[in-house]
Image 1: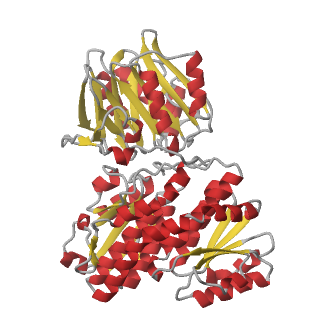
Image 2: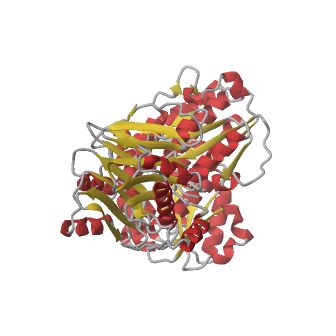
Image 3: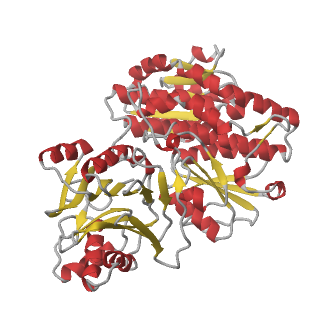
Length: 615
């Protein structure tokens, strides 16, 4: 959620840190700041609101120096303000610290320091951590060559919670230290310079050589050299990785928003998800990254899929796909709930965790919980080198390219395509015939061009959005495969337009939901020509009988639905299991155009962050 950028080298730090902060804007934030060491000591500047406000302040009060730390904050403890923005200082004022995560025992530590006469400027847990590091620093002899690093280690052994931190001290103008637990942190290595960041996209214009730090790693950078140690055990070493520029760099191009660009990238991102993974001889899928033999796959008796938000919705589609095509029982669950449940699971259960970033805190915790209990846990994520990718027993990369818009779009369809391949693969190993496999593969290969066809409807969908943009509440209804698509459509509408939106299986209409139907509550019906089409049509007419307005997502050539719906958006015909890949596209465009017409900040909606790295 929050973003960290630290720099030490031969160049001026301020422009490098500022550039990095702008590159991390997409993660979501409410304030920003930086601290730099120079001939005048440790100087800092912090501003509530957009990074532009910090940039403007730096123009009138620049911070010279060649070492510094910077941060974008998403409020947890204490509201958005200049005082609560990072970096925070210790009691001496000589130490500055930026922090992602949550220090759970900060209140008891704060009480201890207040009793000792410490003064706090902010309401944050991070300032307490800065005071804790500073206190240990004062207790370590000045002759200790690793004084700052050892102070950080001693402090972190006292805290409960999660952290990614970077620390500098006025007395050490050629040194920064950092550490991580539960919050991503990456060391980047340039020519006679080093960076520390929570996201490689912040520094990709300067270097592609990185070390992905593991939990409990502590890094120290000084005089052009770095060392990595562990808080808990002898360090096992590190690997310098070359970052793929295509996976880390994103430009908006001619599009007005990243979200629209990413919606229009879906023909390519869906293609990337299945490219090279279709076996046209066996009419199956090739997913070598699962790291499981055919015999091990055959021994699976149950699958558990965990995710949050859009990732969970894709998992729900995956549930129907795998149960239908492979006849393996599947259960989906909120990753945030799984780790706290005593969930009975058979030893032959396979766990999947789904996360675009590969850093989602709740999903990562669920992965660790599953592995702690002895279950094989596989990841589906987009970011190579992410924590989930490194800690899982195997998995599948989405290859969707960077997704900058907070509202997930292409990651949903990429995840659904991967679940389609997984279902096809498992199905062909069990009950799915070769002719059925061939039919599915042929339908998959048509999906990118069919998505392109739907994208051509963007302008007409904008007209529909203009018609409904002033309604305060909307319902989204669908059945079977379309149930999760309805949930995803409602999520997109609420998170970027701020219109209240709820989603239900269509058949639940008569079980309470119908009480909400009136002329002021339009309903989006997902009603393609599938196995429950007639049932959906009956529900649709029940809404119309109560004067509810209906926007229908229907299959091309369906003239009957136009007699009842107020507006219809048509998608091409495909196999029922693949239909979610098509029906979700109009819902993405509908929410996007609605938000733009309402003047919302589409790529950075209020209160939201792209990567949720705290619980």
